[in-house]
Amino acid sequence: MTITEQVKHAIEQPFGKVLADKMALTSYTNGSWSEPIVQPLQPLSLSPGAHVFHYASACFEGLKAHRFDDGSIHIFRLDAHLARLQQSAQLLCLPLPDESVCRAMIVDLVRQCREWVPQHPGTLYIRPTLIGTEPSIGSAATPSKDALFYVLVSPVGSYFKGGIKPLRLSIETTHWRTSPEFGLAKAGGNYAAALKMIQDAKNNLHVDQVLFAPGNDVQETGAANFMLLNDRQLITKPLDTTFLHGVTRDSILTIARELGYEVREEAIPLDRLLAWVPNGEAVLTGTAAVLASVGTLIHKGEEIKVGNGEMGPNAARLRSALVNIQNGTAPDHNGWLTAI
Ligand SMILES: *Cc1c(COP(=O)(O)O)cnc(C)c1O
Image 1 (cartoon, rainbow, N blue to C red):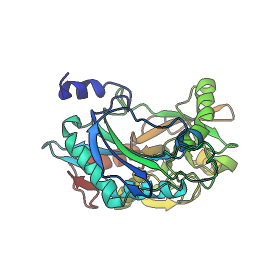
Image 2: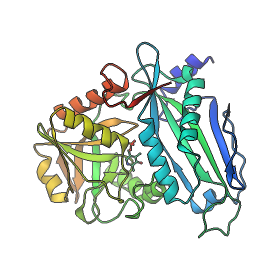
Image 3: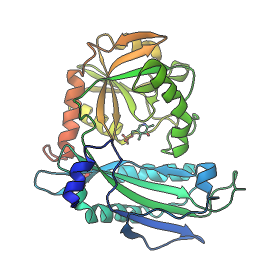
């Protein structure tokens, strides 16, 4: 198959299933990073005793490269994602190459994979990954001395192939997604910790995701941030260590301010959420789906419709404002795109 054919096939597959045929990589041993390389996509060879396999020393990023109609390719908010990677690495006590090196590896890989970037609304999803590789099964309480930083890219179609279907969420008021100090790390262990709760809710309540609201503090779902909207206001939880600081969240807040919404970064107690939804909108934000509407909430066995259960006008407006910047049909006032 030609690359064009492989991309066409890839965007019909579930998100992230197909990887492009190249990867970027550098390894950390004896206190220094190797010269980064781009190589054919291939399996890694690691000791079965590697730190990551036992003590979950792993974090990642998820960002996208977009193709404009003129064929040029642009990475969205590369700096913000690099800053967050740095934060995750620090929380896991893992070494990370200098920001300029990480940036160059990502840009270089996307450049070498430019044929893999689909037409809009498809995008090239970029997955920088950092793992602890020290072969030592006795290092439960010590950081990995060795590490591997690599970058994968995956052509992805629109998240909403079957049309934009509002999501069904259950509200979890007892359990945390992760530990309160670690929610801001994009670390593999956080997803492992939340998986069974999400799986049980999917099986028992037929929901798409769980909205975590431990102690009635509405936080986020398993992989996206949460916001309330109406014609005037946008409300979302202020940044703290309990949840992931989404780059999409930040982008939507910026765009909402520019469009004249009153943006309130305030705690959302469950009562406030329940009072809001009959006449308001609720959305999730994240790189994969950009912005998705919540149509139904399940709370204490009861089904609660958000508005009329469909995507609301404010969600649609904010979503297209962001998507238009990403695909080059609206100006990039904030300098969010890196041309490659
Ligand atoms: C990645 C992620 C988000 C969204 O972050 P973006 O930078 O907008 O993609 C939100 N919550 C969790 C738990 C995540 O893993």
